[in-house]
Amino acid sequence: MERSFVMVKPDGVQRGLIGEIISRFEKKGLKLVAARFESLPDGRVQEQYREHLEKPFFPGLKSYITSGPVFLMVWEGKNVVPIVRLLVGATNPAEALPGTIRGDFAIDIGRNVIHASDSNESAAREIAIHFKNDDLVGYSAIAEPMIY
Ligand code: DGI
Image 1 (cartoon, protein in one colour):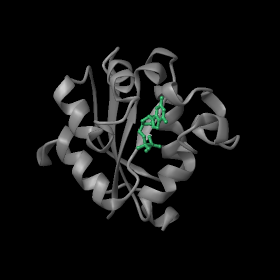
Image 2: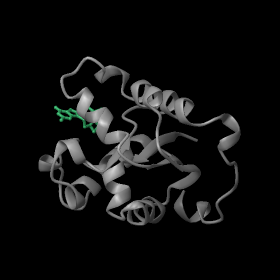
Image 3: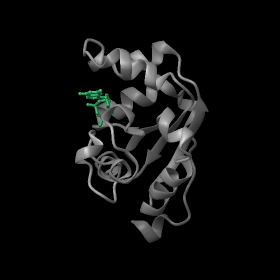
């Protein structure tokens, strides 16, 4: 089954949105297979955002992501990567549609509440940055025959 890496960023944590975000993915029918609450070390932020290291906004992005704890998750499901990106909405909340997480809860691109993998390749890379294989919990979700 496909997997996506999702992170509630420090603004989402401080604004009390962890439960709301988990709830949206659960109601969609996706399956939670790993989660951890922690403050990210600089090294993992740099690995996570390696394609942005040289961008002018990177110093601000790094201080934002390390400003407080984040909630890391791995979600599983058929087409989970594009489905989660649709639920999350556009990177810039000013362009994110109502009904999406960023459309409903964010205003500024520098405080956009949540990260989600943008391809299956990124998902595999990002999951490996933050989780060990043993952290991923294998179980059968009893509602699965109602969803698939
Ligand atoms: O995958 P996304 O988070 O939707 O977007 P991305 O991978 O292109 O960028 C990662 C994060 O970097 C994004 O959530 C917010 C930040 N970012 C991207 N482009 C800009 C930016 N921040 C600022 N301030 N300005 C940008 O142009």
